[in-house]
Image (cartoon, rainbow, N blue to C red; front, side):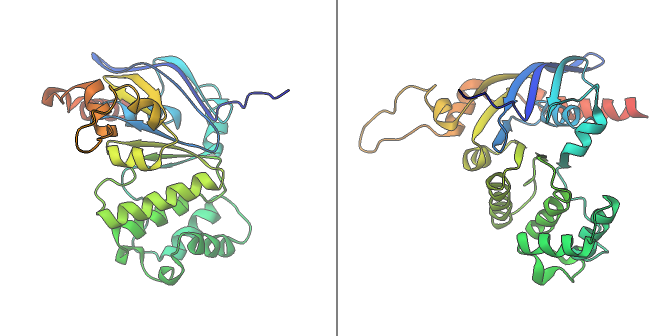
Length: 273
């Protein structure tokens, strides 16, 4: 007899509004431990707002969420000890060297032998040769890899990557993709938010499409592709891409809705002040 594995992340009925602006309208999904779960949506769909709730930076108006078995509202301290969050822009100190950035975070986490921790992560992320250079001299891909390496200090079982390849060139994106795949292979649970269809297609074990504040579809890439009619065979059989699935489900983008999450973020900033 086997017991079903508890989800690493469980989200049920999460809602969030900023005054009259309804950003999340009842979001539900589970993330299996050790997998890459992609939350795919356009700008303003509510992806960053949801990540902020799951990482205890923002309170939901309704619904429940657990991360690593801990309720995000009732036990935020335990949640923070179980996760790491990498935002849309690399949060490295560009004056310090790559190694010094890692040592600093290891010391802040009160880990024994911070130098050994730093050296191990530099090797793991192919940054050993650049470890003695100031982070400000790194390429975009190297800076992002260093940022993710810093996030892994202390071996958090769950990592949130909020649009980790925003602004990166194609080569740097591929470097980050390889890093994310290695994380999952090592047993880390990854929740990835992205607006790039090819990124979700390349990385995710499971993809949820967030549109107008709700999850409109959730499944594997094969399951999502099966939502469309069978491929029409003419001279060449053309299989549906994730882009075909996404546009069929959400329709053409409405420019008036593109500023939704930007406005929500601004409202959140005013609330925090």
